[in-house]
Length: 119
Image (cartoon, rainbow, N blue to C red; front, side, top):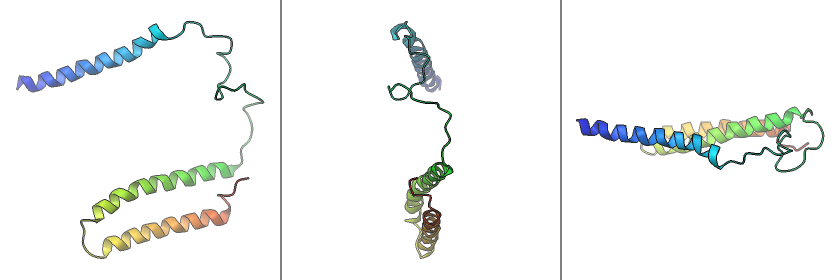
């Protein structure tokens, strides 16, 4: 019984040591000087041009939301298909078809509204 807790204790000690190492190691290996450009915003190594306070068209946000919704739905589609594989009958096929139909309708609606057009 005590040997089971010993493994838990060992893993706990290893976890704490790893967290402490990852927190303390950068203090020893990072550069001490911040440099002249440390206070400037970082843009992929390029010198910033213009102000950061510009307006974006709302369609960029709509496109991002549509992409996020379809990415999440496609991730959930695979486990559903795997789970329905063990169920016999036409009901799983109808349910997945309705799901894909709603998805297709949402794509067609977004396309009709012009969300996918680059402006």
